[in-house]
Image 1: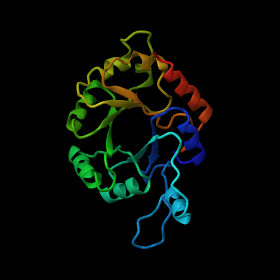
Image 2: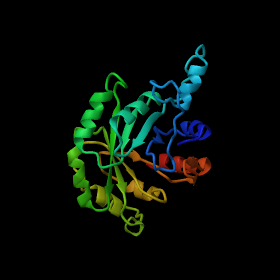
Image 3: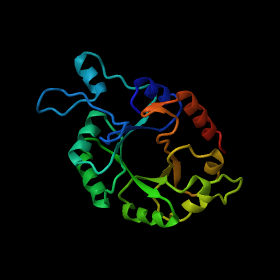
Image 4: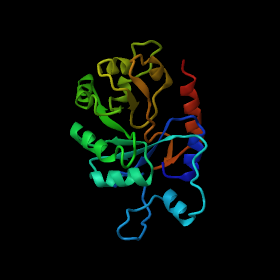
Length: 232
């Protein structure tokens, strides 16, 4: 997310994580403000405001929402800088990063930069065979994100546990919890309700409910969040 008002509104919806896109070519890229100090890394807007008011205590949001920084095949120093400046709780890797990258990154950040940093690895999933890629990240990632790229027509909602989505996810036999996401429209609530996998941990709303890149339709987002919460 990019807009302060959206971030504040989203924090009141009872969501767990907020994502900030640090992929330079993305239209949702979150830019940083230069400290113009030469040797000091760039600062996030939030931290720069705090520096301008040194006697003002650091304001924390009323509800603690985990901050996720999204990267893809980026240099470690860039990731570390943003973890520090934006006080990220999670690093999400959307590129072709091997498991060793996750290990090295964790050692670089935890505990000196951000103690307890969590790492999410995204894996594109079109068929059950793609879920085998998750094996490489077992014990390396804290969360997996299965980005479901199967055709919309193949993921029609049903009223039982035999939905195509549930069948697809059943091929994952790892112990690392996972989130799911998909392009375009959000998951139908019947599809979500059908998921019986014990490691299913939640939904990542990627570009859904956007009025423009990085700008959410908060009214529609709220309705969807409430509908998902109502699933028993």
